[in-house]
Length: 341
Image 1 (cartoon, rainbow, N blue to C red):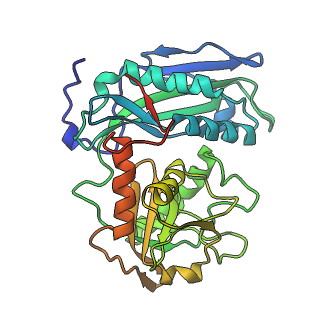
Image 2: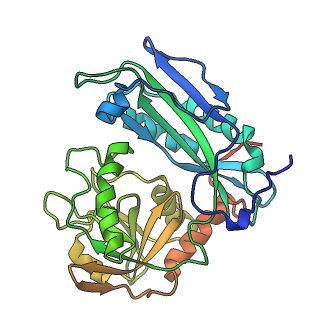
């Protein structure tokens, strides 16, 4: 299979239209069979539920070329399950797990020429999403929906190597205690845009959101979970009902315990503790782990011992082990790798 004529090493993290995407429609209480299409455009009524009341959810995962030349995806079953949870919370029909994985398989296989070669540093990013498609003027759930999945080749999240981030403690709240912070809904990301733009204007890379009830506990950033390392090597991650359950974080905790023999703890993390940690990272699909070097709380700086030049030693081991599993250099736990071809 001949690859597309793309300069893989210079790809950014942006949208490149590929040949095929998957579409399935929900109507009269059931999903249709779904199919691939070459049409990248969506036509909607002006009163569509997604446009009026933001009834939309999404996921994000990647396809890779492994060291032995196989095209694989990483734990798509967990993305399917998380999307099912998101749908239930927004009164949307659940898209079945087996159909989700089938859609992933078909889209990656149909666009195999866009999957970057091993060693290029690039990957194929997959974006499954669902939205209310029929006209809705009263405040209520839509009755018709569309599930779609497209893909785009993307470059490495870190161009020119990993540089630890500087983040700020945000004055904004990311999610209410009993709100929608635990699901991947478009509305959560819309409300975070002002906060991230403001942070960038002030010279910061990201925000640290505290819990909105007491503003004493660490939650997450606008699009990633926190992971901390204590000075004696324990891996700690915040626990909260309003944090999005990251698949990358879940995988890193398993790797820490089962591959690296580290002690792992998922618990409430008070902001007062942050100054005592040795390392800090942000974990998510795009970069796996983004190291944090400095946290600024209204002018007061917390400088992590790991510094501002590279990843801390434990964070680096976690990163190298998980990416080694994804790329086929390290044997994966059963069920983690879904082979496309």
